[in-house]
Image 1 (cartoon, rainbow, N blue to C red):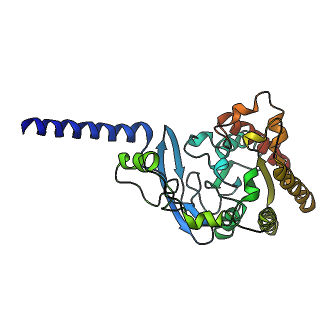
Image 2: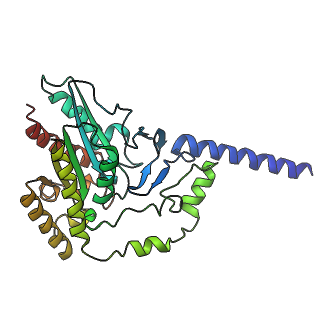
Length: 316
């Protein structure tokens, strides 16, 4: 009996040590949680702070990956609003100061004119958002009186499906609540076999001209910015497999050309990073994985966007 008690005690102590280690070293047990939304699909729940794999993540009261802000900026503030998906958001693999928005804040602060006393680059984004999610966010919250709106998409976003809240609370990447233990999160995220979501599978087979529907959403975003007399900048990053030869797939080439023709017809300032990345010595070194950028990639993207914004806003 005594031996059994000793074994139970040792196992208990080991589990406590593992729990503490998972929380302190990796941030398990405190994941970002999501809210379902009928129009937007889903949002990061407001007022969150966590650290994942050593990287700090802060979500403000407007579900942005930014610090707390006021709805209306103080006078003499240069404010830029970035709308995007996981490229803009940065995810768990990006420390808060290394997100594109944070890097742009630093760059624009050093370049601001006498007309601006401070700079704010707001980051309204979430994993797997597409143009229709971003349009719905803008319609819900407005543009926060930003002088410029930057829509940051990637090639896959041209084929994005309609906003849906189906993943929230059902997909392990979109938890609706925090797990009681870090051990439980590790089990749910890495050990438990994921359960398919049949309704989501059907939605992902959305018929019709998806590219055309998403271009129409971008046009509506542009229309809202023009109505409010804001500057609009559209930016697209490529997938890693698009770099070099053979380059984008045939259907992507067609979609890219449609986007190019669309931006010219709509007179949208557009930055395509495919040729920019291809001009780099080792463009693959800028990627975290097949689609997401690392710090080096974020630095290049933020630099190019910052230069374009300087021209749009006439900042020397």
